[in-house]
Length: 185
Image: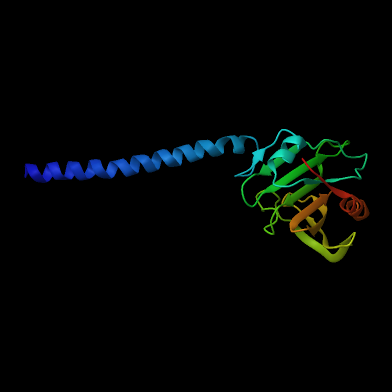
């Protein structure tokens, strides 16, 4: 009888090791995610301090608009990057008037595009094929989950998917998109 009780204690002790390690791993993963939640930052992204840091950490030069409307604030108010595959960069520019996001530029160094966690999808109510310079593009208008209306253009830039969103006029969005130039590190 005592041998059976001792065997149960040994089995229980051995089972307790993986349970404890698993609980510790889950706890550490939760703690790792906490700063992103507090900063309203999607998982697996890094808040970059500047465009200069983004240039250094992204695989190639980043696309920036040469034409920049006066109604927007430069530099971007938010620079978020995913530095592992698929590498992605999100730049958010605010309106001078409202100090809220008015232009979003998301670029991915793969055909994967910008993840929905980084750039939530629009509920599209209008969409057409378009041209941005010589590049085919898809121009759309849609609403975010909060009801804001955005104009969006999505295009392929030499194997890189680029999405621009503007809370403004379609012609202004196309002008910004046509002015994109690659800024190298």
